[in-house]
Every structure is written in structure tokens, then in C-alpha cells.
Image (cartoon, rainbow, N blue to C red; front, side):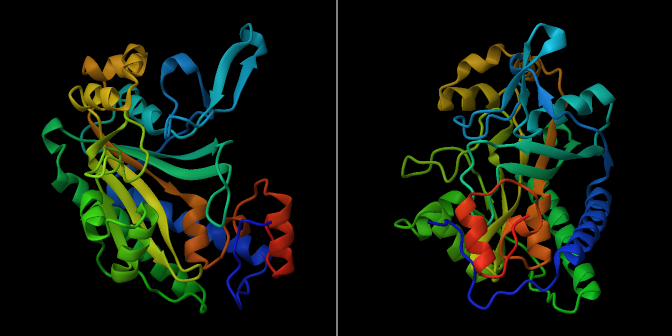
Length: 336
């Protein structure tokens, strides 16, 4: 049985070729807006890293990376990245970026343990970005200002695509609403985290849910977040209401990164203090890395959103369950 849903009366507004042309329009315009808003420079980035570097994103701590041995290096193990959350911070220091400057990159990853549906794929493509800040700027005001800048880039892109394609109507609100994960729990204590997100975006259209990763008053985190890149008190997700699928849709995850105080605290809470022996983590503790804020923005997610597609497979080539491909085809939708 298929795990995806095709909305009743849904018909793709663009054919396969036209969709590919529109994807380029979205990507080219949005990344120019993002880089201008945040003063970012594009850099090249790795597809794989070594396990001992500690640079791979452990996500929720249970996902298995794709690993392989390098023949030329006596089968030295390497891992396909899950994201570049940690690598970007190291790169900012290595490349000599100054306070107020940042980088972004096209990140491609394989998440073999992902459960696929309308908005999830085992192939991840996103803009990973990171910017240098001062230690005294590790506060909520910096986070809020940066969220507003990213959101403005999203709003301008929506207007741009609406001007290019008549069928695209703008529905992102002028301002994004801020709320903490604990406030969501207080308001809807009997709902699941995803249900809380849906409820709040139905009310406000676009929301930044703050403080994700640490345990809430019910003893559970709002969502899983690795303990060694985001500061759980200074992070969050940009989530919007998506009427095509009638869902809450996360477009970006971002946050101010851990410092020498929050890193050991979060590692202890997560039960993985052994990571302090890895080179990346030692550099944080020894204050060898710059203080930063950063995040990831799903490329296929925003293409799906701006082009009003019902399934991420309409804008991204991946491997989908046979039953999903068949179900989509029966409803007039082609998964790439």
C-alpha cells in the first residue's frame, strides 16, 4: 500500500520539461536573494568525510550513513554526508571569513534510513549556509533578525515566481510568527509535535518554532536535533502552511551554533560525551573555531512549494517505492 497522498482534483500545472525550466528559475533567483540578505559567498563542499573527523551530521543520532572504503588509501573508511552543519563552521575558519561574512553551498546527501512520503526523500539537496558572528551576538535577537532575513528571501522569491507563472498565487504572510516549542506544548498538550505545528501554521501561515532539541516539560523534545551543532536554546525551524497538501511544511532549519559551554552540556544530556574526543569537538572546546549561525534550506522543498507540486518527487530525481510510483501514476502524477 502506498504511503503517499495525491490531493483530490490535483493536476500538475506544468509538464515535465516546463517543470525543469521552472526549477532553475526558483533556484537561481532564491540563492541570489539569500546570499544578498545574509552576505554569503558560494563555496564548494564535500560529498563525503571521514568518521574520525566528527564532521558528519548525526541528525537524530540513529540514522546510518552510507559508508565505503577508499581503495587508494588502504580501504580508509569514508561516509557520505548527512548534512554540512559542522563542516561549514570549520570552513569559515579555514578560509578566513570575518564577522558578518558567510558562505553557502549546494549540499547533496543520502539519508538511507529516511521514511519517504510526499515531502521526504532518501536524497537530500539543500543550500547549507553559515555566517560568522561575535560571541556576544549569540542571543535571540540575532536569531530573530536572521530568520526574518531568510523569510524575506522566501517571500520575494514567491512574488518573483508569481510574476512568471499566472497559476502561482502568493499566500505567504508579510511577517513570520515566532513561538517556542514549549509554548506550543502548553497550548496543545494532547497533540503530537507535528499536530502542534499544523495547528499553529494554519493560524499564522508562516511560523518559526524556536528551541528544538532539548527536553520539554513533558520530558520529550519537540523534535530530534543533534547535540553538537545547534544550541538548543537558540535554534528553530521555519514552517509554513501548504494548502496544496493541507500540511505544515518545514522549509528551513537553522540556529546559532554551540560554544564551549553549550556543547558539553548538550552532549551530556544526549548521552554522547565521548564525542568530545573528536577533532571538531576539541576545536570548539579550545575556541579554535569561529562563533557562527547557520542553517539548511531544502532546494527540492522550496521548488515543490513555489511550483505548487503535491510530491517532492515531481521536482527531484530519487528512488521511490514501486507502490508509490504506481499510485502516483494512476492519479496523473509522474515521480522522477
